Length: 164
Length: 164
DNA sequence: GGCGCCATGTAAGTCGTTACATGATTGA
DNA sequence: TCAATCATGTAACGACTTACATGGCGCC
Image (tube, rainbow over all chains, first blue to last red; front, side):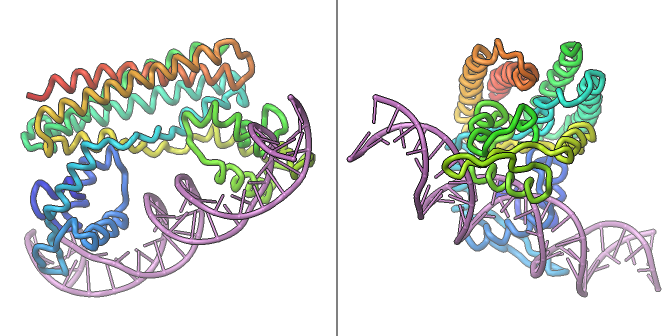
C-alpha cells in the first residue's frame, strides 16, 4: 500500500484495482485485507486521509513517516523466509502413486507452467510501453517470472523422464 | 505428516526431526504446528496411536483412510495459489532508492542465492545415496531448487545491469 | 548426580480468507 | 430508470508463529 501510494494519492478502491494488475502477481491479497491494512497504516500514522469524496471515498496519501518506513523495508532486507510450495511437497510423496500417475503429475505441471508463461507473455505486451516506475521495475519482476517458468517447465519434463 | 508416516510408525518427535531435514525446505512449519496437526489428524481418524512408549511417547501410524486422503491430495491437484515473494515485491518499489542502492539490492540477491545454492549442494551430498522413496523424490525436488537458484542468480545479475 | 536429549503440549496473538452487508453515483 | 461500477467495511473462522511450560529417561 505504501509503495503504491508513492505514485500519488488514491482511495482503497483505486489501490485495489492497481494492486490486482501489478503486485497481486507476487503478493496475492484480498480486498478485505487491503482495506484493513489501510486502516492500520492510518492508525500508525504512515498514511493520511488527504481528501474525502462522494460515496464515502477516502483518498489516502503517504506521510513522511510512511515513506521512511517504506525505504527502510526495502533496504534492510529481512531474511526471506523460504516460500512454501505445495507442488514440491507433493513430489516428495509421489511414490504413493503408480509410476504412470507420477509421470502424469509432472506432465500436468509442465502444462500448467506453459499456461502461466502464456499469461505472463500477455501482461508483457500490456506493460511494454509504460515508463512509470511501477512499469519499469514491474518488467524486471516479470522477467523473473518468465525465466522461472521456463526452467520449471524444463524441470518438469526432465522429472517425468526420471521415473521408470 | 501423513506422507512421512508412510515410511513407518513414528512419534511426533521423530516426525519433527525427519521433517526438518526434508520437507521443511519446501514447507516450513514449527514444532507447535506439527503436534497440533497430529492431534487433528488423530481426531479425524487419519492416523492412529499405534503404541505408547516411555516419556509419554506416542507412536502414530497412518490409517487406511489416511492413506486414501494422502493419495487424493497428491493426485487431485488443487490449483496452486501463486506463492508470495517479498523479494519481488520490493523490486516494484526500487525506484524509491538511489540507483546505486537499487543495484546493491540485486547484488545482494545474487549473493544470497549463491549461498543458498551452496547449502543445497551440501544436502545433495547428504542425500545422494538414499534409496528410500523420500530420498529418491527428494532428489527430484532438490534438482528443482538447484535449477531455480541458478536462474535466480543469473536474473539478479542481469537486473543489476538494467539500472542506469 | 546431573547434563543432554526425548517428548508433549498450551496460550496469546497476528495474518489471511471467505462470505456477507450496505449503500451511493453515474451514464446510457 | 436501472445496471454497472464505485466504495467501504464487518464477522467468523482457520492457519501459523512465538513464547512458554513441563517433565521423564539414559548414560557417563
